[in-house]
Length: 629
Image (cartoon, rainbow, N blue to C red; front, side, top):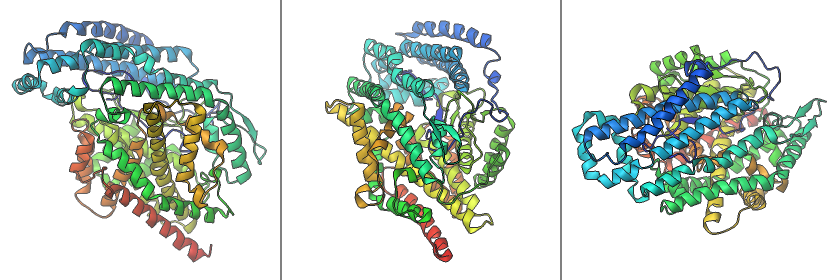
């Protein structure tokens, strides 16, 4: 499991929440009177707020009681097991408490009582982190030889063995009891920038109102921007960009300070724990080599010519004399086809057929339950995510389904996460059920590729085929190239702080503009980049997730390799894929993928992804040439 920022539990766990790239898919404007809402049933977690309050009170007592094990881990294998059982069970119930509050708060972020409940749950998580902060240093004092002997003596420790051994692995970066307790106590402070950013962008910014060429008056909040930036009318697209980014520019300094504080907290924690740098610290927990991050950036730079080829193809298909940044989002071929939620379910089931009967049965089970909050509405959290941390219940999914094909793709993506959670829970005890993001996004991006190929396999017109081929190209651009650009920006601003440079909103905009120009071929004459749009960094919430976004890019590469194996008739591919998902958090994700043929520290996965991208462009050009376009 992956805990909220700043909480450092002894078991190495974390709250399993995986998200789509926020705002990279179009979502509807939140309406005061939306479609008849399809809502999740949170009563399966707690039947009432009173029950939640009672659980919170019990957990406060349990958290306080964990101090009774301090100084006793070296007494015997039985005591070690008893301590870890109690800590683990407390952690599991805290996850239940927090997830309920988090989901309820995201239904309508304007409801103060729900936001306060979420804050109380986060505070108790922080207290838990403090209460168990002594465990890692004490394990190390007992010594690996003694601990390994205990693991061999008591079968009841088997479910804890991976997390205990992971703690021993991080001995060089584990501090004294007192220092660990102090770091744990900083949790609410460290989480501050992310909370401030979320509230500012969800409720405090005054969004511009714009009249489009249709005469429609639209509010350009984040959902409105995501919808209208894809307009077929170029003048409208430019007006949307100018108005939206003009609003963000007014907040450049304050959001710059927020992100600067967030980055400095990472650098502080890395230095305190004696890591080489913040990147090394961030990847140490999941045990991912930093070579993966750097190989991703290097491979992406090497493949920029394929991205430039896509942009030139986009310019050709849109019939433009030149290309601007606001021309990225309209589909290459317009489609007025809409998909309701039932059709999204049917397409997800059909496209997932290569994954086998058990996988499909898990999807059907989820579709039959009240696991989703489906449509946009005023105050609701934007974007989409799957939260799978209530081990004894099931995953929950937040969507903002608008009926476009992008929404079907998002639906399939999030249900990939949900089935991953179900498979992991099925094959693992709570202690190793929570998987790393590094494999989480493979579960979702594989489903997206299978959906694209399913749609292309239908008997459809050239125009519809071009639409789905264009969607596949956009997935490569948005999930691989764009997310790598984000990852490179994140690395640069951390390295600037580590080098002693002062960060500001203006400086971040300058760094981001340089990357926009490089990734979009501005100096090669591929695309014009307006400096006014370079404040886009302020719009990306994932920069508050600490070296998170790179895993979208590595995952679409890994997921594409798996999908290609399925589609090419590799009979072993399904077993390998399901073995990865079923392993949950019982193995280090990088090593697990290596075992099943995907090494994300070498060129092969990235080359495979771009080879597919080039083949898609070949197919598009064949159709265009045949049509004489």
